[in-house]
Each structure stands twice: as structure tokens, then as C-alpha cells.
Length: 155
Image (cartoon, rainbow, N blue to C red):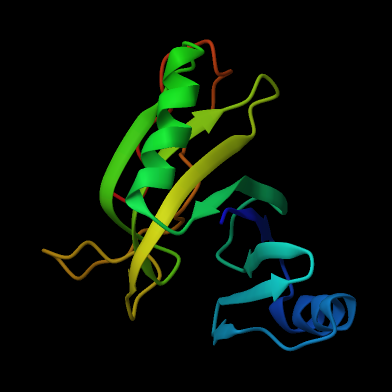
């Protein structure tokens, strides 16, 4: 089953955790020094916030899937519509290891479709170097979906 995903960049993580915990009626399911995530069942949403110095507001949106087959089906649908895709296998971002692809909508909002494979201890660590990115998740450059694929994130 698919789960809607929204990631918002914030300046005050604690204030936003209090706010969204009230909105969702539960504390975050993942809490780090710079990140929090709620895996809400009703409505089924993966809602994440981070305070990593990026522009405040919607960082990206997306769809989280449970299986490689669901990921392949959604990717095929986007490809058949001739949307520019950027694939990322084994992406290390947002404390997770994931297979994903990115799209950018006509307004410039990044959309991520992904399957989480595992948790990782660092927000955006490059496996071989152990270094983290200053910002992670959404592609650094955004362009409308009809343009070239956005610049790679987390890598």
C-alpha cells in the first residue's frame, strides 16, 4: 500500500514537533537532533520535518511504497508519460537507505517515489566517506517535469 510523503524544512524543530504532535495526536515515530518523522495511519502519511539550514517550507513531497514491484509500477507510469526521472538506487538520506526516483512538478516542487530498505544512523552520509551533506533529500536543482532531470541529491 502506498503512503503519501511530505517533508517540510523548519527553523525551530522543537516548536514544530509540538505543533505537529498536536495535529497528528501522537509524538514523532523517529526523532533526531535535526529531524522528526510521523508515520500516521489515518490518514496514511509519512510526514517529516528537518532543521538543516535549508529554505523553510515544503522541501519535497512524494509517495512511499512497500515493495519493489510498487516502485517499478509507479516509475513505469511516470516514464510512459514522458516525465523526466532521476533514479537513485541505495540512496542514503533522511536516516534511511532507499531505492527511489525523483520528478519535479511544473511549479518546481520535487517529488520522490521510494521504497525504504533500511534505517541508517546519519541523515545523509556517503557510505564510503562517512561525510554528510549540508542538505539532503530533495534534489538541489529543480526544473519543471518536462525539462531535464534535476541534479542528484545525497550523492
